[in-house]
Length: 342
Length: 279
Image (cartoon, rainbow over all chains, first blue to last red; front, side, top):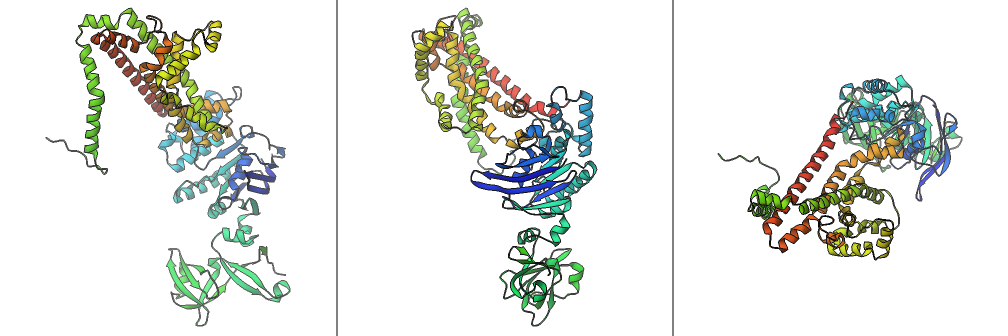
């Protein structure tokens, strides 16, 4: 089922949370809403679910306007950051809840309900935990119960609000790879909210990067990384060096000096040179990579390069050394505007 | 052999436990034991006569019946009031919240006189109700009204904090799963509140059994009809029948105690049942 969101405005009291959101999500897609806290991503998700109602704008499922339809009637699955399980009910009853509260005529028969819930519990690999209470499960298991519960009503849209936010790093990684596999099997249109760019990149088909109530850029991970639309997107997607550069006329037609080059740490090289200008401050071994920080007298922030272990081995870089800076790839911005080669 | 205490990280157990135990002994256990001893000065037959006289039996019916009825009324009204106070924002909410404690703060005699004044047959409200065929003052109805008044705070105050702590996400989750508002309240919110409601009911019931000051004014105190057991005790004391008074007191004590244990077991059972609730 496709989702169309048009011109959504939302304010908490006088504080605007969303300022004109347009977004089209294709049927079967897995889309991430990525942004810092307070950017409005959760509010947008809740508006799609029908848990909040926008002051302006429309929400449509498959072209059908659902803006004024309540969450109860929208038929979307919603997974909460803190699971929101019914603590007084067993895992089985949690998953069965959506089926048991159906109107009498639509309610599945006893055997069918049993079978459906069992299948779902097997799907989330919790078949042996049917009789447990939520309190007896780990965080990762609880979130899988929440997912099975949301899927029990066979929604055509699945919304997940920071689904891995409350889990520790290892469980988070396992669970998101598992979720990606699940999505590849059941193809339910899914939107998830996250502030973790790594998570968005690993899971999503497309990513909407949000900032201050607006979508800064909507693209697939590769485009987002190689052609960020704004300095904000570039900074948010990971550590980046910002170097003031002077553009030669062959780039934009005329010489200019107010341009910044954004260079990722792994695209930056330090080369030993007596008159390089920069000096290495620290070298930290991070295991698979080595992090090198250098300071240039003209820059306030230190420059960061990250080298793979193998490459670093032969470079002979050490703290105190004078080096020259070389960038292998970069993105240019003039103010907020991306600069492309003329 | 000296018992070996397990070492605890928190110091001061011996001292605090000692103080608590002595205090409990002096304030609770010794008086209760004295009560039992005094009543034991009666022979079995005398004891039976004192506690099972028609007048005493009628007073138990009034006391326990009205207390249970008041508890049941508050079982519905208390959580409802708590729900309104926690969930809705309206002008005067803080005032209503403070008013809930009024029955705690008010001297019970004041409450009794006020209620009597309100419901007496020669007052407007009392007269109107009497014209509808419902005499409130000087009947068990009046006693029940007084007991509802004094025991309401117990249910509100025991449910309120639990409701405040309840994660609003679970109600939203129920809504996205297709549950209507009433279904959500019944299947999601209420089960979470049950232990608190039962605890509040137990306190309200216990308080209502012992209530004296607010009841005697409105009760009319007609033997066999609207005479509560505590009043019967006072009456026997006035006639210097100390043993007879303590005998009835023992009945009240044992019944209250059994009722509290039963409610606690029920509470335990509602919590336990959750682990076995899978078909």
